[in-house]
Amino acid sequence: MPLKFFDKLSRFYDFIETYILKDYQGSETLLDQYLHLDPADRVVDIGGGTGHFSKIVQPHVAQVVLVDPSRHMLLKNRLTGILSIQASGEAIGLKNTIFSIALMINTLHHIPVIHHKSVFEEINRILQPNGTLCIIEVYPDASWIQHLFIKLERLITGPTHHIQSHILQTILESTGFHVQKNLRPPHHNWKYLIIATKK
Image (cartoon, rainbow, N blue to C red; front, side):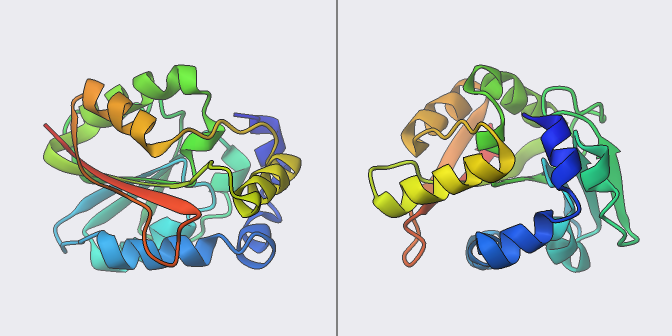
């Protein structure tokens, strides 16, 4: 992940995602449709940047922990009740089996594929038995819209590492997860959503 680039981008990141890429809105809708929250849930938002999605789920759960390698992105999270931790997905540094839900929203493509297995092993470690992992990613298919989106994002954020959802499912199942949903939701066919549970 181009960490220095995200540090510099942190000041404008939410504006870019909301008004230029218009990416936040679609992911918010998918979370509302497919992620079932309980007041007792403890949620970890991995690669959550400025905490945009942490702030959305925080009123509905017991605890949210925001994890991101960029200190400057984390400093944009000023909402009380959300703990911010500067760490990478490979070494989160939290206790075993303490979270019921892990989020990775528009995060994975910033992590080189060679590190994906380590990241998911770490997520598995901190999730409770039967805990839920929710992943939302851009679908890297042949559509010119997807290609344009990916090129624009690379121009803004630096190198990206998009993978097909069936490849991601294989990685998840090799790291202790059972994939319950792997779909391109209606009206959001430029994204895919995966819901997996810890075995």
